[in-house]
Structures are given as C-alpha cells and as structure tokens.
Image (cartoon, rainbow, N blue to C red; front, top):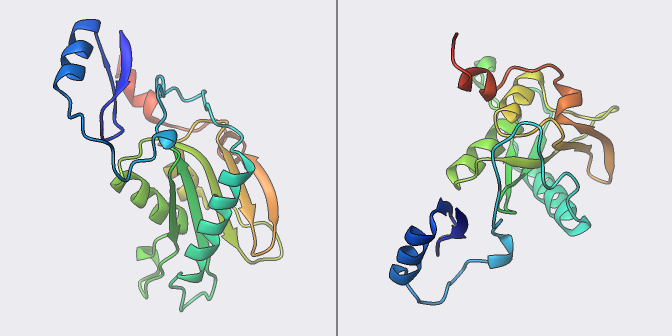
Length: 193
C-alpha cells in the first residue's frame, strides 16, 4: 500500500494498481491556493499515544499565539467580562481559532476551545496537534474540564497545551497531564464484550 494525496490535499491509502489509476485520471492543472508544504503526507493511524508534532516550530507557535489573541479580542463575554481565545493546530498544519461566547442562559455559552474545535472540524481537520488558550488572570488559564474532554476526542495524550496571556506563555502542559486516565474514542472502538 502507498499513501498519496489528491489535489485537494486529502490523504488516501491505496494499492499500487489503484494509485496508478488515480494518478492517470487526476486533474493535471496546477494547484491554486493550496500550500503543499502544509499537507501532511502520511499522518499514520489515529493513535491516542502518538503525536508527530509534539513541539511546533517557533513560527507555528507564534501563529497559534497570534490567532488565539486575535480571537480573544472578539470574545462575547458581557456577563463575566472574562474573554478567552483559543487556537488549535490540525494535522494539515492549519491554525483554527475560537473565542468564548456567553449567553444569558449561562449553560448555553460556548468556550473558546469548543469554538476552535468547531472551526477545525468544519475545515476538515480530524486531529489536534497543539493547543493554545489565552486569557488574562492572576494564574494561567487552562481549558475547562469539558473542553479538555472535547480536545481528548481529537488529540493525543502528549499533545501540548499552552496557556498564555497578552504578553507571554504562562504555562505548558500536555493534554494527558490536564486530563489523566481519560475516556476516549478507543474505548468505544473496542466494542462491548
């Protein structure tokens, strides 16, 4: 089996014969608007304990911080006045940001990390390789318990989760440290005996 990417950047696995057929039939026009360097050629299995990009480059880290800070500036927090922004790095090297959105019926609000996950999934992402949460407080702002579980659906134990304020990174964790012994997709994939 070989791994190939189609002109839209999607990854597929196929036998040599089907690869040849796909290559012969694919559109030969140049790719427009697609940054080939951002396409991960072989993401491998969606293994809970494997994170191929545990340490993003400084440039990618700065993109995550900038995106989370911009998102925080757009937060809708008229009740708590506590604005939060989040940014996630997906398996294609794309950054997805979100902000908290409060509601007068408090439980109906949306956390920044959940908002960023919605953007990630909408854009076709399936894995979170790194996360940044930005908030202004006396101590580092980490994802809430519910958001840790939401991140768990898409991220490995060793996925880095950084806390930051408007000026610097205030804490570094892994998702496994923030949510130890968690329940996740592999529990359901095994089936019920």
